[in-house]
Amino acid sequence: MIVKIKRTADPKDIANLKEHLQNKGFEIHDSVGKTYSLFGVVGDTAGFDLRSLYAFHCVDSVIRVQEPFKKVNRKFQKEDTIIEVGDVKIGGDEVIIMAGPCSVESFEQVDIIAKAVKASGAKILRGGAFKPRTSPYSYQGMGVEGLKILREIGDKYDMPIISELMSTENINDFIKYVDIIQIGARNMQNFALLKELGKIDKPVMLKRGFSNTIEEWLMSAEYIMAGGNHKVILCERGIRTFEPYTRNTLDISTVPIVKKLSHLPVVIDPSHAAGKWDYVESLSMASIAAGADGLIIEVHHEPENAMSDGAQSLKPKKFNELMKKARVLAAAVNKKV
Ligand code: PEP
Ligand code: MN
Image (cartoon, rainbow, N blue to C red; front, side):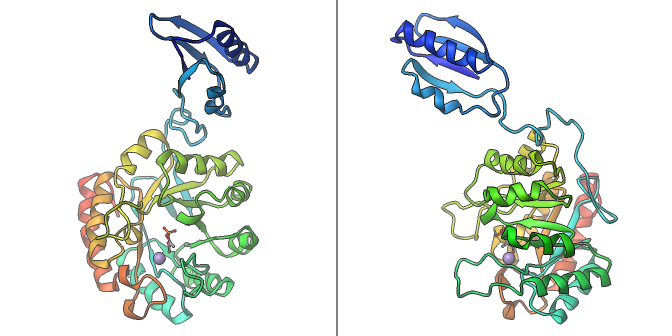
C-alpha cells in the first residue's frame, strides 16, 4: 500500500506512524517530495485494516496496491478452476446451462420441466425449495420435501441439481440431497453461512448481491475458500440501478473483469436480471459472447400459474429456441453448449 503524508504533518506523528507500521511487520520505503511525502509499505496487507491509518493525523490518504483476496486471485493460480459435478465440468470449454423452475411446487411440475429442459440440452436442474421472498406472505417454498423431489427427478433424468440454501440449520439436508449449493444474492454477505460452506466438500454457486461491488463479491468467495472449500462458482444476476425497465441491470462487464481478477468460473443468471421472459434470450446471448462459463435460466411450463417469478420464466418451447441459438453463438467463441 501507499500512504500519502500531509505536507503540514508533525515529524513526531510521522515517526510514530513509521514505528507502528514496522511493528506490524511491514517494510517502509519513504520518498520525500516538495508538497507530499509517500510511504511505500511492503508486506502482506490482506488482513490489515487500511482505514485504521487515518487515525494518524499525518495521514492524507492510503492507497491499496494489492487485492485483498488471495485464494480467489488469478495471481496465485494462473489456470482456470474447473468444477466437476458428476460428468459436468463448469469452467471449461463448454457453456453449462442450468435450467428449471424458480420454485419447486410439486413432483409433477418439476418432472414436466426437467424432462423438457433436459431434451433441449440443459445439463443441470435448478429449483428453489427454500425461497428468499421479499414478503413474508409470499410463497416460501416446500423446504426439505422440495429438495427430495428435486433429487428424485435429477436422478431420473441424470441431471445434477442446484438449489438455494438460506440458513446454516439446513446445511446437512443440502449436503445429502443437492449437488451444487446456491447462495442467493440476499445472503452473499451472510458470513456465518459462508464460513460453514468453507468447511464442506460441495460446490457452491455464490450469487452477487444486488448492491455489492465485485470486490465485495470476491471477498465473500474468499470466505468460502479460506475455510478450505475451493469449489466456488460465481454468479452475476444483475444489480440494482435507477433503471426500472428491467428488474435488475445485468452487469455483463463482470465476466471479463472477474475472469481477469480470478480463476473461478462465472455463470450468468439472465432471468433475475431481466425480470421479464422476453429479455432473457438476448441477455443469454450477450453472456455467452462475453465468455460466461454457464447460464442459469428459469423455465416453467405454466408461467402464469407459477408460485414465483412467472414473469421471467421461459416456456419450454422458448427455452428450446434459446438453446438452438446458444449453440450457434457458443461456436463463434470457440465453445460448445
Ligand atoms: C433464485 O435463483 O430463485 C433467486 C432467488 O435468485 P437471487 O438470489 O439472484 O435473487
Ligand atoms: Mn426466481
